[in-house]
Image (cartoon, rainbow, N blue to C red; front, side, top):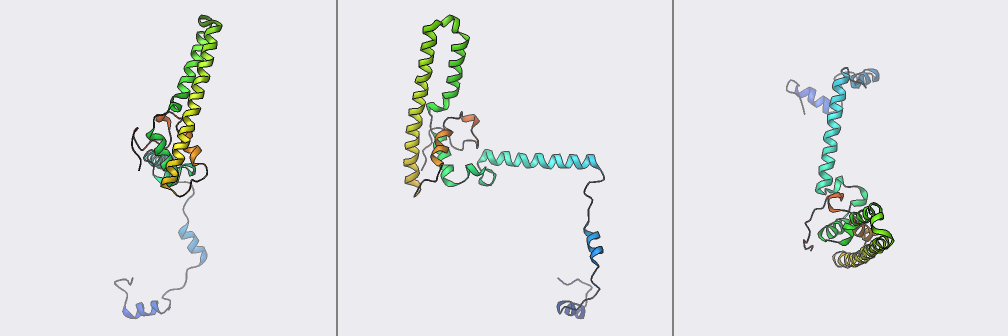
Length: 189
């Protein structure tokens, strides 16, 4: 864009490739671009850097919470994985409560072992294996239902999506990352 005080002849000469001034030497160009690596006020520079990193981390945290694709980890990206996440989050599964139940069994079997005796410990152990069997059956049916829904929505199932969706049901809902985007009982299209 021509400057206001530039004449028509100078503008024409500039457009035709004529030079109005000598090319600056490389040393002068480099010196004009140089900035100090370390700011003169180090405490202010640290504070600015800390604030910039905190804002960036907060933006990433909010993006993960809202499920924005650009902020998700590579293992969480893609339309099939989003569908698998929503499928797992819309269901209430026995598998979700597996770890709290197992912790409860350990507390009962270890903490109350003198009171329970041999028969009580045996009953606790068998009931723990029964819960494990129920969780395995629940995960099997979740796997099959997810595969069926993925095949109706998409042409084929990507590698690892079934494991991804099924093992998401093992996590407690409030601990899942990315955060659940659908409520329990939501019907997925």
